[in-house]
Every structure is written in C-alpha cells, then in structure tokens.
Length: 163
Ligand code: GDP
Ligand code: MG
Image 1: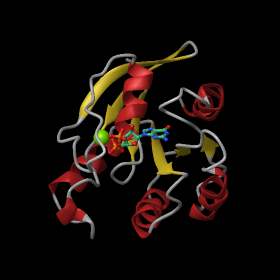
Image 2: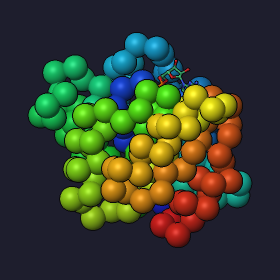
Image 3: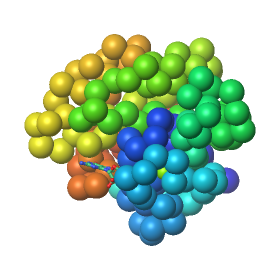
C-alpha cells in the first residue's frame, strides 16, 4: 500500500491545484470561489519518483465551519487520521490569517508529521508570506507554486523523511 498524504488548508490557498499538479490529471475542481471541493478526492501522486496516495479535502471550506464544527471539518480530521503526513497549504500572497492559525494549532496538537507548504510563492509577491509562515510553529515553510510547478524538489525533500 502506498503512503498517504492529506492536503489541509483554508479555502482558496491552492489545495486542488496542488492535487492536480501531483496527480497529473484534473481530478479536482479548481475555482476562485472558496468551497468548490465538495468531496474528498483521492489520487495517486507522483513526485520525482516518489509515489503516494494524496487526498484533497473540502475540510475547512464550509462557510459555516469557520469556527470549526461541522461535517466538512470532520472529513478533514478523518483524512488526516488516515494519513502518514499532513500537507498544510497556506497562501504566501495573502499572508497568514486567523483560520490558518487555527488549523496550525489543531495540527500541532495532533501526532502526525506536518509539511508546511507556502503556495503562490512564484515571483516576489509571496516573499513576506513565506517569512510569516514560520510563525505557525510548524517548522520551515516550503516555498511553492502549484500553478507554475515551482518547488517540487523542495517538497520532495520535505516529504521524504515521513513517507
Ligand atoms: P483550494 O480552494 O484550496 O482548493 O484552491 P484552488 O486550487 O481551487 O485554487 C484557488 C485559486 O488560487 C485559483 O484561482 C487558482 O488558480 C489559484 N492558485 C493556485 N495555485 C496557485 C499558485 O501557485 N500561484 C498563484 N498565483 N495562484 C494559484
Ligand atoms: Mg479545492
């Protein structure tokens, strides 16, 4: 059985774009509107020779679930429970939000390893957000661009010890 990686993060940070990039097919819906990923989606990811199962969830995309209760959040918890690693995605251009901090707190209190991915880091517009992401207490963020396919080697390095 392949190791499992669960993608976690607030709406619109690029989770589904990342999923599609790693699976190599457009299995997940990408949209500017938060909340488009209605279901949990699973695919087989390939990253520079590393193969794993990847799960894209709608976890924190339910507007009613901003304060965390709700079915969608339970779905994320279930995905993370069954995973070997959580891939926590933030938006470097938007910077860290209270919901990012809440998700970080929850992940820090859990016992699966977390890889922190600072997405939308292409160009310079994400530089401040990448630095801010250190404050989440989840180690060094991996600067990444799901849209442009940048940072794949660094993501590989970050995942390797855990899967
Ligand atoms: P999700 O809600 O977390 O699943 O986010 P989506 O994958 O649906 O993406 C939300 C928006 O961010 C879309 O408009 C994407 O095109 C955009 N996006 C995703 N990845 C990147 C990236 O690396 N850079 C930039 N600039 N935009 C991105
Ligand atoms: Mg999505």
